[in-house]
Length: 196
Image (cartoon, rainbow, N blue to C red):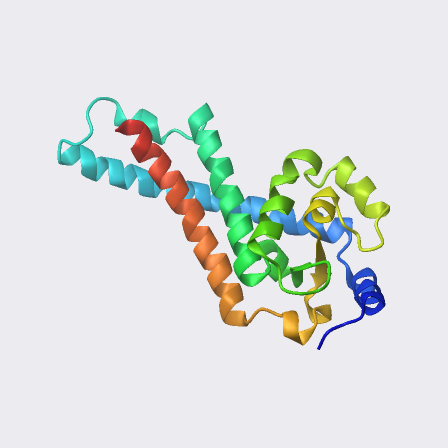
């Protein structure tokens, strides 16, 4: 069922997630991310230990698993970006959004796309759900932060997403689990690559 432009605006403006709700979703994702980073770091240590026992890695390979280095931070940020983009593109939501029953869609209420998810998450460098995001969302009929405006996306309450635009529960689970695995692997491989 295709909605008229006026119906799209009405649905999106009446059920768009506000700043506070989206901030809580982002905080849930940050806490979850810390757990994924710890898991990835442990997996990286196990891989490096296995490589060292085979003689493939020499020297202080333990230093490569430290995350508080410029390279470690860069890999963590890359993993976080991959997590958000993949979860939103595949299933329409990250874990934080799932818990709070929020979904990312395109402005026309069609399913979210990879490009939309990428642009809106790269824009966190600019608005990061702080004052710039609050100001942008306050002035937007559909509560869009700058990243949403640039990517033509909107964050809605899940029950308001039209049935044709809803991603299945299977895709939602696949998006969150697959993106989580990407973040863990990104962290684990960062230590391995730095040690080689």
